[in-house]
Image 1: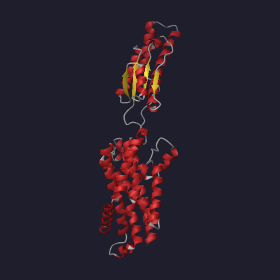
Image 2: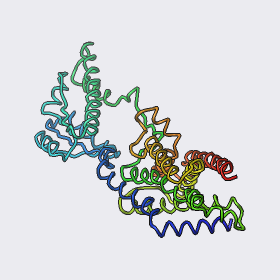
Image 3: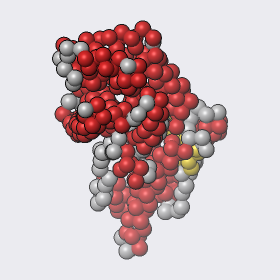
Image 4: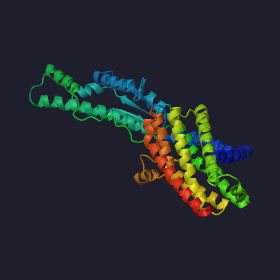
Length: 390
């Protein structure tokens, strides 16, 4: 092991001296993550909850109940509610882009409801904020459905000849207090969704990781082409120490780069990578997986250039399929399943669990999957190296 670590130390000094590993493993992913977060961050949704305007031009009991329901949603942290004086003010705020959508209870709404006449709640939304508009429409629809149910209950009483002011009032109150027969409960997503800053920080880190780990394992081919591999094999060290030392170089570079990126993106972009202990386990697992898989490619390539080109192709394809450039969850089901064949997807899933407040136990599936990649890739690399170098 001492000989392997000496080889690793020599290669690390070489890579740190020419700064190529630092540029590819830290600078490039950091810059791209920052740019992508600014340019495409809005497509991933705002990290804050939706703000919906509310206008009560009616002033009646039904409209007041609607306002109380909106405030209850705000208190639960589902939406934020901003009350405005009139519909014109709401339209102006939506047109200026200050609000995505709003709800207006028009004048005479309560009176029409009590009279059993059709009543309308207006939703004003912006084409630039379709998600917020959909939320506002859903809230208005849910409220309108409740009002319609109450009107039908009152209508049934009147049709039966049991109408009277006191009876109708009791029916209305009872209808409002009846619990719905069907409710929608909260369901946790199987895959956590990262906020934009964290998504691009993590995705660029794991994408460039597969380019970074080349530096260690490709050294073996460079030693072979340069004629120094024969001298290393003639030295009084075990032959296995040579490829092990190269693999350790890749692994150490990967862990260092990931650590620097996690700290830098947290401070500069507000990314949330999760608790350090569990995060460190993920770093070790993905670094081993990347080193092993790239080692297989290197063992089969004949030249340094061929190995570099092949690694680049595989890294880009795995990055695309694994979700390094866009989230694959919630979209194409086939692509979502295919992403599970990449370390990228499992690494990002693990970060998602940590961002959601999970600990080491929550990322066990990700660690297990990355371990499988590392073992399979390691065994394949060992077999290929034995056949090639004897």
